[in-house]
Image 1 (cartoon, rainbow, N blue to C red):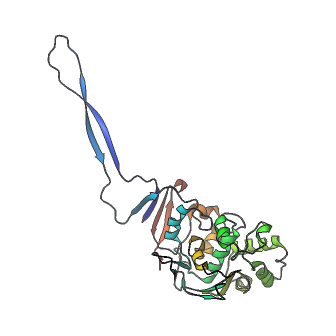
Image 2: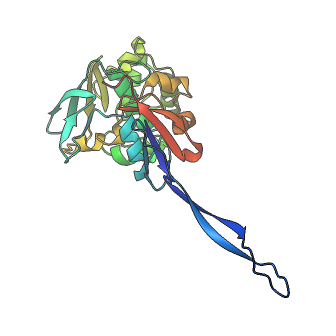
Image 3: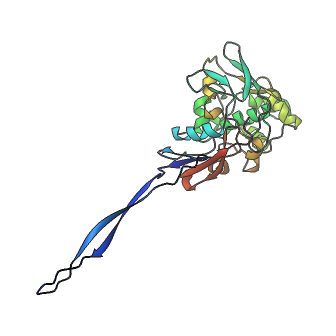
Length: 304
């Protein structure tokens, strides 16, 4: 178990004072006097519990527990313990290694990236990871309209003209909706938002129309199959793997999100922000203190 604490106290020393009367010698004029002695009383922690690690190094709490919302450096320690990405830094340098992807390939001179999803990975709630979860997570990252998504994916996977409409969309997704549904999504932004609000809040990879939207090839995020996923960039960019190796590339469980508020454009999920959600990482959240003063994590029993 790990406890992430903010300004946590790990040892206490208390001193108390006692007043003791001192006998006096006989005098012509009786007087009463007292002296004060100080007896230190020290209180320390008992034997360490080797199953509990208290991390009191954090100087301020995370700003949110949803990786699509959190945007401060203090979030990193928590996100790294709970969530995982398709690829990550290897821990000792900037070399990229597959994590939730079992392997990947780079095509079209660093404009397309293809990932094979690692089999037999489950979230801490038992849900098995697949490429549809990956699509959901990347689209949701942008669709919530939060700074973390916009700043890291702008001009890479963000539709160039979408921000002028007040919404942040992956490029090509409006064409994908129109091709799958026949609705004029490319010319009607409100219709697009209505479709995505409904789809992302009722996410169902068994739904043929949803699968057609996700598998449309000319868009930023493409499901190639249940365990295969492709990212198409607007420009050649050789450092894109480094971009998605950070927490804004983490994958979440769509079923959990949808059962706790769903997904709406430009709107944070307040439940996820406050409570976090199922993880694929080594730890999962047990409890959260007021104002994120402490966050208790325990070993994820489903960790692969």
